[in-house]
Length: 172
Image (cartoon, rainbow, N blue to C red; front, side, top):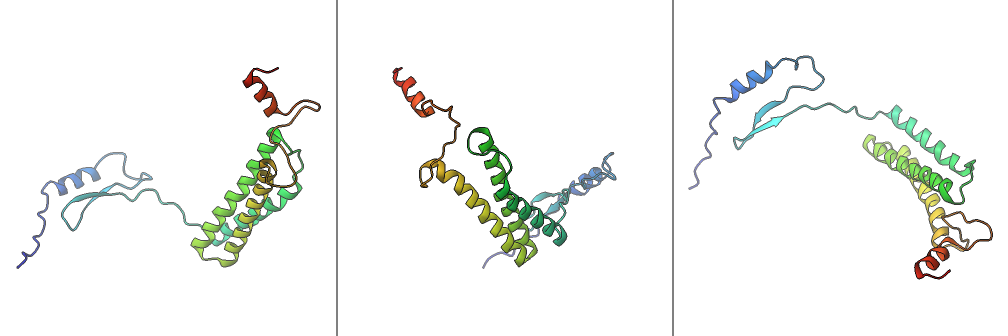
């Protein structure tokens, strides 16, 4: 016959330690709550802290994000700067990745708030960002019919990979 579980003995010093922790100067009125000690069912001591509370997203905040995200996604089609190669291309690619990140962020928030319309719009924004990324990457990887390069070439010179190949093999 199994023995009934014994009640864990209370640590006689636990109450004293809790009282002394509560009396520490500088902790009253502070932003972070005082950590407390709790006893688990197995009798082990565990520190429980309230931590700083992060505010939950609101429906208003969600729709502000959706509006700004969709505006950013639409504005990517009329990007006013040169973006064909070099650093301007990297800047444009970073802006496109922001569209993807914002779409994912809004999708997670909309899922938490159970807002179906906002979630669908966020997924459309996410797919739009992925389509813009695919347009940039596939043309430069040789997969698409229209080829483009990452680096800007000086007119009339050999491509940069040819220059690298010639320098690495010792040919002039």
